[in-house]
Amino acid sequence: MGEPWSFVNLVAKIGFPVPHVFALASAFTEFFGALLIIAGLFTRSSAALLAINMSVAVCFELSKGGEGAELPGIYLIAVCAIIIAGPGPYSLDELRRRRVQVDRERTVVG
Image (tube, rainbow, N blue to C red; front, side, top):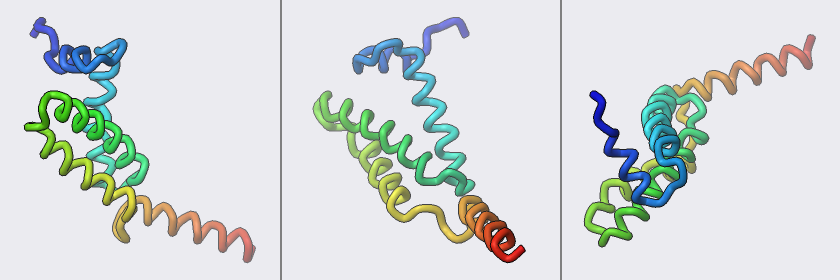
């Protein structure tokens, strides 16, 4: 407690302005984005934000020599696959889509 957050220093080293804001945005994106993908809610949007986050991580690791770029690269490929594939049949996005479709059919019929 009371010590500076090392991730803020890393974000400052990358060159982002207002590093504490970008560090918090990155941490929140990784945490809540992963939870939303697991739940299948706002799947493509969450995966797109995570893809941006992982792209920055890959570029930073490549600028250092590339030895640590494998793991963020794998995560980047995974979230790009989720963006392309979209939510699955048991996701909350699919449940929401079906509910909207039923509501539209009721509106047209009734």
